Length: 337
Image 1 (cartoon, rainbow, N blue to C red):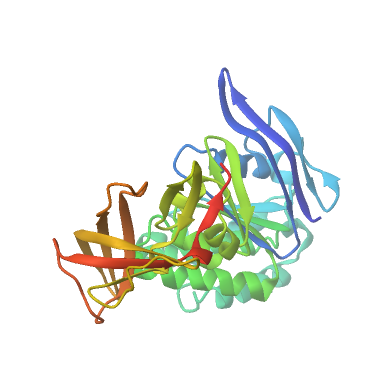
Image 2: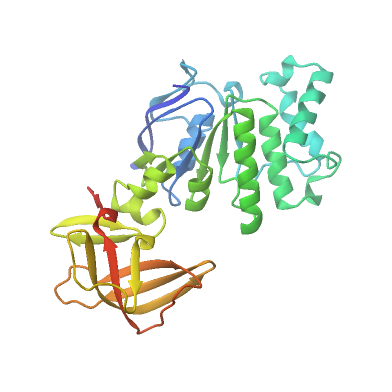
C-alpha cells in the first residue's frame, strides 16, 4: 500500500485521543476521515503531517517509515482550516512561498522552473489574472484556492486537508468541493480529507473512515457506509436512519425506503412486506424532498416512530393525518452493534 497507518495511538495524560488507528491507502485515493468534533480526526491528520508525535504506532509512505521524520522533510503538504495565508503577500508570492526552503522540493528548481510550476498550478485552480492581488482582496473561495495551490505546487506525495471548506458559504462549498475532486483526479494525487460534514464526505470520497471517540467505527465506500452501517452510531451519523428493534435485534431502514399512503397500502402484512398504520406528527420541507415524522398506531408494535422522506410535489400529507406505511423487508439491514 502507498500510505499505511499502523496501530496509530495518541494519548494525553489519561485522555486517549486516537486509539489504534489502522488504514491502508492506495496511491491516488481520496480518503475522508469523518466524525463529530473531538473524535480524533484532526489529531490523526496532524500525526501524518508530523506536527504531533504518536504515542505509539507507525506511519509508512511508499514503504518507508516516516513516523519520526520532522514535518519539513515529509513528502506531504497540509491545507489548514484557516488557510494560514500571508496577508502582506500577493497570490503569486503566497503560492511560491513553500518553494523557498532548502528542505522542500523548490530547492531543486531554478527560477524558470519555479515560475513554470507556479503558473501551471495557478491555471489548475482557476486563479489566472489574480496573481498580483493581495489576500485581503480575495473572496473566501479564492483564498481557499490559494491555500490549495500553495500545497499543490510542492507536488507532495500526499495532500492533507483539514476541514478546508468550513469557512465557505454553503453554495460555494459545493463548487469548491467539486473542483478539489476534479484536481485530485487530474493529478492522481493521494488525499486525506478531514471533515465533520457527512454530505462532503459522501460526495468527494473514494472511501470514508468514520471515527467516534478516538476509534474507527467503520471504513468503506460511501455506498457501503450508507447502505450497510456496522453500528448504530454510523447509521445515525450518516444521513437519517430508522433504528428498529425486533425480537431483541437492531435493524436499520432508511427513510426513503418507506412508503406512505392514505388509502393505497394493503394493511395485510406478508412475508415480504411490513405494513401498519401511523399518524403524521411532523412535517418538514427540504427543497425537493418532504420529511415526515410518523407515530406508529399499534400498542403491540416494538416500533414507536418512523421518519419518512418523499419527493415534493407528489401526494402530500398533513399533521394529524392517519396514514398507512409499508416497507419491503429486504430494505431492513441488521446492525450487529
